[in-house]
Length: 323
Image (tube, rainbow, N blue to C red; front, side, top):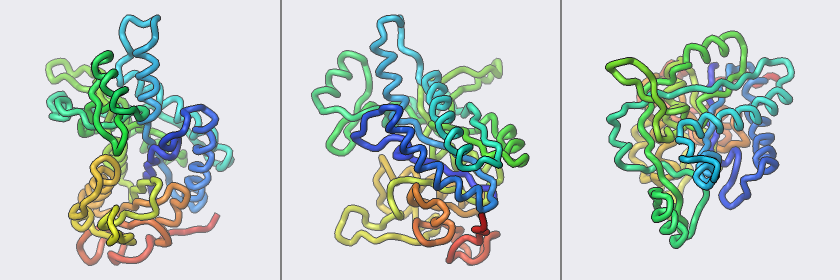
């Protein structure tokens, strides 16, 4: 099967951790171990990843750099995070898969200049701050800040992805047997101007789960896995009636009252992929990606009709687990 696996932000850096290289390298080592199991089971593998903490750190450093007359724009910083995270993933995946080609590809995601998201920033990036610190950043740097639980974080525009421009290149690499790391941080956002057809960078960060779903659709993937720090999607999350869901249809997933800043984008991306392709999506723990396919953990999302191209709408995904 062809699988697109989207790593959550916890794959690199967990809330409250120092953004040191050694910390991120340790998390990448754990993520690569789980991802390698998918490739060793004989599947074609495309890996995407988030970049919220990393791009936020680079933006903060760029804004404070006295050598610059203006901070680097978010599209350029996004490219930097793709290179940094890509090389860490490739190195670890090569160590786990010595007989497979592994490559990281810097990719661009086309967005619409008229997307209303540019007027309503919602995408969290960077570290957390107190309310007082957030107010200082609003005043001193002109940032838009929003509450994230008990903390505050910077928010930036997050337009919907329209196309991953390098998808044909990714397809060629995967068909040739290469494990590909791409579309990091949702891809570098670019706008194509209709009068010239030229591409220009966009001051935004695209949601990585939406881009992963779109890329999976463009590549005719069989499965979209969204890997995060929870074992399942939960109904009635945060209440005494909380209940883990081993399976759901897209409609059932959309009906859940899920947190907007965390699980809701993942659920929407998974539901969209299944609705548009008839394929299968899974949301579950980063350290057991293969277990999601086997039905031992995570939430599998299948089409609402009785049968899909993958068989009955219940039970594990048929998968060869031989190494």
